[in-house]
Image (cartoon, rainbow, N blue to C red; front, side, top):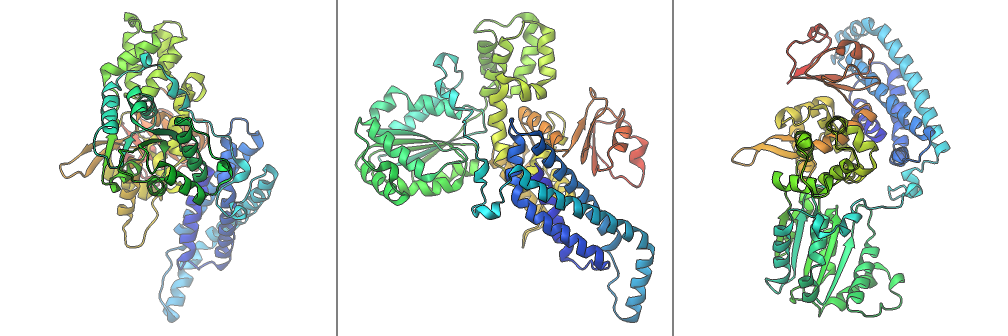
Length: 580
């Protein structure tokens, strides 16, 4: 997103302007002016990025966001040039100090003129971009007061809602989970019990919870029940109102007049009064925020009648919050094992029949890339069921999986569901997560090295009383808790040694990283890259790398993977490289 680029640059400008780099007063004043303009334009960025990502958005909006992003990159480069030439001046006082300043300044008169000229050009460009924002109807978050952009809200369509209606015959591998959850719900202590089902998007949390919720034993056991979709953009009043309505409907009772016009406090009072003497069960599906649970736990009463609350979430932190309740269970949903994955794939791709021998090898390769993610297996199998049973055709599908995820309507649900986790990230984590796109497929990343790379790239923002390494470790832990990063290895005291991302999630962020000019990956099958980029990943082959880099003056770092011979360009003093 443009928001990432501009936020990083603004943070660096603020840091720069806070130090004592005052050697060139004129340049400093102009840099301060750019900083002010960027702070103002940040108010439009969330709205602008949302518009740019809509499929039906105009080309003008997309061009505006792209220009803003590239301008931010130019400013970042200029900040580095400014620091290189002027930030390390002598600090001596008196006559000797004055002479030192003069001797320090003289060699820099030419670069100072060039930087001042570049600053003026960029300031004019940023000003024009700010003026152009009104052309596309971007709404300043300062004007809205709440930080949201109400003028650009898109009707919410839950990409996982269709999974609620999947037939039992199409489901594989959830029976044991289903039996365990039902046992927790209908047996056990009379105290109110909270159950969280935790796992990354696409693991089947929704299907599992819905099959349990609809089970005959469950329906007969509870006096009233409610299934509530929370999602990322919930309104608490709507949540409370839906619970009340579903409770009344479950008992075939008339919903009280005035329910639709009640305020939050009245809704809470009505809900608590109604459910106080009943054994209820509520499923809160797709919970993203910890604040939701901290609110709702006080709304539903502890009535010692065997009531139950179920939440499904991608966030380990949200799932673990139920430990605040005396009676709780946490169900960490795992990926399907290889046997179940293969069974599910054959059900979808071959309509329950056996896989033809000539397609077995490529089919196994496709299933392996799904890494036990049921939603992905079902979508891939469904997409391939429409294709000719031809090995060449299926190999082509596997080789172009990244573009298939972007354009194939059969795979749209995977892309949407996995992308939701990325979209929910705060800006300071988006750059860190996109950085995983720079590593090869199935690559186990050393966490210590990753943290140092984040710091070197400027992604980690300091916190009072903490080192940058400690802050970066917090970032990594949060990505793990959000089910975006998987642990590859740890030691006996639980210290994280290495990590990785799911292969399909990597494909999605690889496309996103290229789209944002964030990074570019050159593998054996690629000959070149047409476009600008900030970071490069050279994997196995260095053919045409030098030419590609020469066409991209904005490049900031290059990582080499599995390279036998390092090109001469990388051995010079002007470029520092890391080889893995």
